[in-house]
Image 1 (cartoon, rainbow over the protein chains, first blue to last red):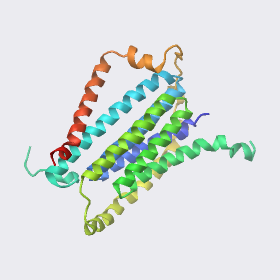
Image 2 (image 1 turned 90 degrees about the horizontal axis):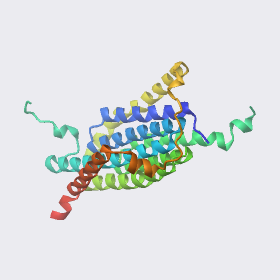
Image 3 (image 1 turned 45 degrees about the horizontal axis):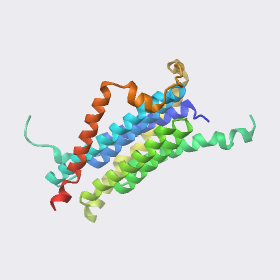
Image 4 (image 1 turned 30 degrees about the vertical axis):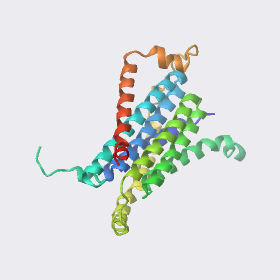
Length: 103
Length: 175
């Protein structure tokens, strides 16, 4: 069974577009992390598509597994940073990280 | 092509999966409640793992389902629970402004879809060149024997993740 290349490619672009839009619009740091995660899903789907249509199922699985590991670590470290920002500023807004000092 | 062939289950399953993928994405990005967003994200991962499984990438599908739908959701929910909820008045004030911001998202996605439908016939599909299929190696062989310096990088990244977890749960220990 195969998913059409056009439909899957549309889904990839919509996932990336939705993630980028939320990154630009949202000020909540946790929502920003969720948007990054959605974009990563789009990239994973693109890799799945590439592996399927180039018949490189084994190699692409190794790449996807490595990517999932890196993805989890990125989210863990970023979540730690968000919590430390919340403890220091008392807010999850990205505006709370802005300073009035120059430089 | 008759009606039964077009609307058969085999033809409809990919469309159902991709539509549910986009629906899960919209729920993830549009839900006001962050816990609901995190749960929708795990649903997105689950649908993605079904797609992986149907495309023959079973091991990656298992990783996606267990790590992304499980571990990442737990991380998000614990992050949300460690941060304070807003007051009701504050929520009411934010909700109105938020609605305005996110009204544009479905419109933007619709415009992109229409543009893609217009542009797609002119896109050259030749970039999809099938390479030699290497059936002698397993995923484990490629993961552990074919890689060299990048495995060191991955170990460093995993260590960084371990320190991130320590940072995440630091306050609970001190309390």
